[in-house]
Image (cartoon, rainbow, N blue to C red):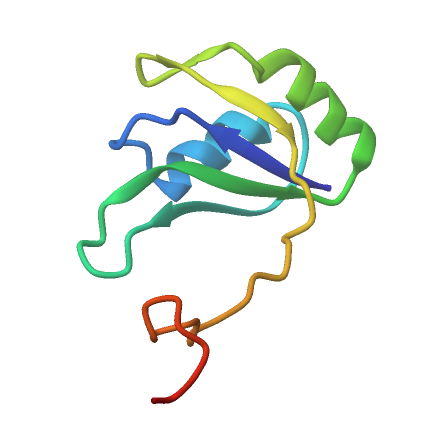
Length: 98
């Protein structure tokens, strides 16, 4: 199960997050999402757990819990939506070329 963790302190690392979730079972991956330019945390992360019942227990126990001084939001991650990329109308709303 893929788990979303929001409202994270900017000081939380992948390893910190893995440690917290390993109290509930085996963690396949723990990834704090960072800004690609600054490298700074964006304040949310994803944790992958193979066992759904362990993942559900982690969600129930950790949603609203305090991690590194902040009350976090924990729930099952939603599938990523396809977003249109690039382009767009650059003509200021005009559809003709001239």
